[in-house]
Amino acid sequence: MAEVLVYVDHADGAVRKPTLELLTLARRIGEPVAVHLGPGADTAAPVLAEHGAVRILTADAPEFADYLVVPKVDALEAAAAAVSPVAVLVPSSAEGKEIAARLALRLGSGIITDAVDLAAGDEGPIATQAVFAAAFTTKSRVSKGTAVITVKPNSAPVEAAPAAGTVEQLAVTFGDLATGTKVVQRTERTSSGRPELTEAAIVVSGGRGVNGAENFSVIEQLADSLGAAVGASRAAVDAGWYPHSNQVGQTGKSVSPQLYIANGISGAIQHRAGMQTSKTIVAVNKDAEAPIFDLVDYGVVGDLFQVVPQLTEEVKARKG
Image 1 (tube, one colour):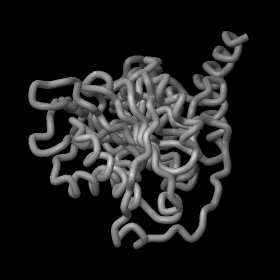
Image 2: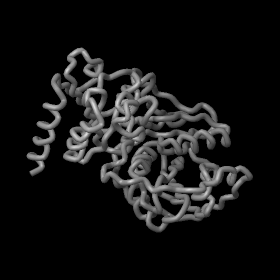
Image 3: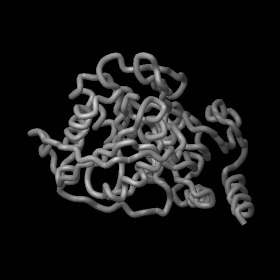
Image 4: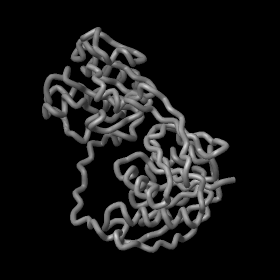
């Protein structure tokens, strides 16, 4: 069976959920070969093997942490040369997309970004994408070279599928460009205790209807009752009510959770582009004609300041 390279997104060996989802998708089109770069391979290896990695290629060097992107591209290029995979899968983060684009150029291959599903095809993997602000679904494949595909988080379930997980050292030679951009400072992000927005299974967002930064506590309380991440529309972010890092939309972050709750958000195309692939969408808006109601699974016409607190209390009551 053909092998599929899976780039491992991790923090010192703690494997992030999108990578485990990639392993699920990789098993649909071949045998997963994980590529772990940087420290923590001993910690990551059992997790990767438990989720289907037949082989685990590891490399550790200061370049992976001290310089941006290019050293990781060098390593993936070396892995592709060693394995001759049918595809290379990378999480659809900002860094992941840059890595994938540079790798595709190196390999002389085509690239597909923001896939939401993968299937085996006679002429290579077939990727499903939601395009034009998720108004259409397309199926496509790379017609030249090794398919390089980035996959949106929450596109597949995390499934245990124990495999050999044989750990092998990957020999990497860094090119002249590897040290072109050096990381000179890191600032640890203050943790809110909530899930990462792009990886969360549930996202609760607020928009213009929240009517002020001080009122976002209503959104946060519902999110916390559900164990959800907090999002915001562009209007709310532009008004300074919530940080840009939490913006959902075409100029913010793209999310695809199991449940998306939009509160006081009209549903402009800019916002819809970032959340329309959510599995279940719920909207609360006092305007019955708001465009958001055109795409929701469940809609509540009402004042969010009455509806959302009641929903929060009901969630808390049911959780005991």
